[in-house]
Length: 238
Image 1 (cartoon, rainbow, N blue to C red):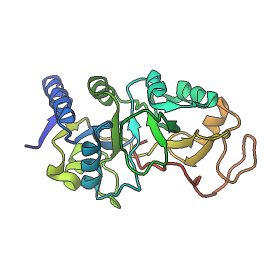
Image 2: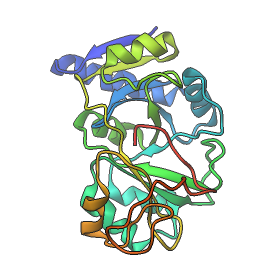
Image 3: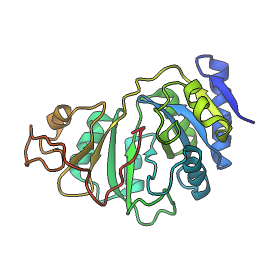
Image 4: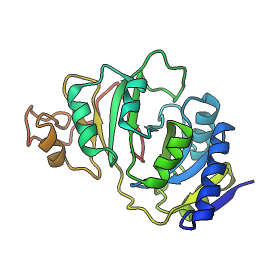
């Protein structure tokens, strides 16, 4: 039975996290706040759970979800050939509103959809989300809304769209609604493929060579060029 927990209450918070942990272990979906928007989450290593997540959103395999992680060190277990500049960005902006696209570890037995061998990772700057991730491990997470509808900024907004397709709702109050910035770190150059809560200028303060697709090399360049072909373009949250 679907249950919502008011996580501003310590007792409900504890009970809700425990229920969410059980639900994830049972291949069910949960809704959890992040620092950007509310996300619908499922076990990243369960194809059944990821399929349920995509079905709940009305989304196909062509739009695979990103993965939220509890700590920076988790990157090396999930990604391969990690660009040194991508590590610099992670160290500077994680936890926070930055999603990094990497080449996925080929040995992992997961199925996030049609990822073309990539995985989008983020460490959210939200205590409730991080506490859940510490209990469950990496979670496939997409914005808690039906495809084509606005992303939910409260648990109640998420329930209005996803209803009983989710086992547990963790209500943590309103969130910003601003999606994360996405950087493709699968090639030689780091490319911003979606603008969000972290600006290009902020990224370039850490890694001057970060640019947008189609822009000339070097800091300060910008463009409205298309997303990079052949990489995963995940939806919020990121």
